[in-house]
Image 1 (tube, rainbow, N blue to C red):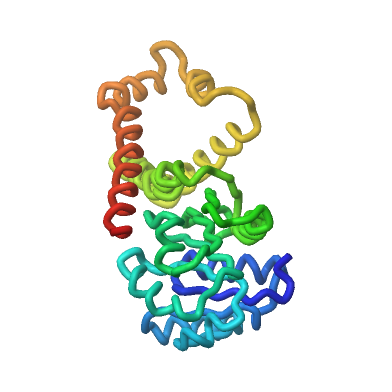
Image 2: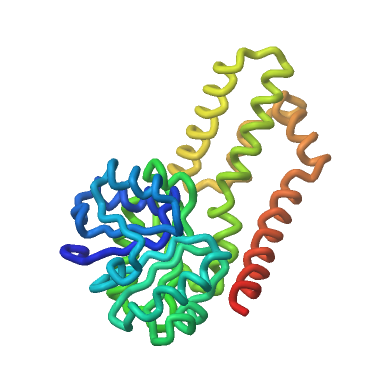
Length: 275
């Protein structure tokens, strides 16, 4: 499906590199099919060329000329300027995959000046090791084949969920931001271990394995999360004592509000960047 297609990346950050690595490791494309640019970080482009032998350029016309798929991977505050720069070299036959937070597909089509097929995607940082959780949402002009291409492409970096575009801000806050929340919890557990006198590396490895094991356990069962955490607790035992502190501090409520606020912020940024 990607055979002989030219894929152009606007933006050369960590997620873009993960996609490049995934596509090449799965042998879905060859390096000469991948064309990369960024604003002005020549050293970054040189490193990508050295590592993957992909095509690098700062010439927008060369980048987009005959491109079949365009991956929009720049920062949101660079988006409008970037669209203005590339608009003359785009056409309705191209598929645009946007991993830029907050920019609606209709606005991308509007900036490009034609009925652009746009699919928005929200990968997360575990994409660096092929374990991303990515939600993809098709815009009005994207076809079923476009969705299949996007699924194949983002499938090289992990799990792909098909969602409605109205839900992508919630997915951004849930799984897009989710690794930050999990690392924050891990940091707290590490600090607790330190304060209790545990050796740092042992603490780290115990926490990591606890997260890995818990994730695999819930993946392998039909039981609800609430059932699984109750199975750990004995009446008046160690886990219950700790759990009562989490309840007292309204930990679960705080995390729910955290994700809701992230969703609201994604919507706010979408309105700002779409004006």
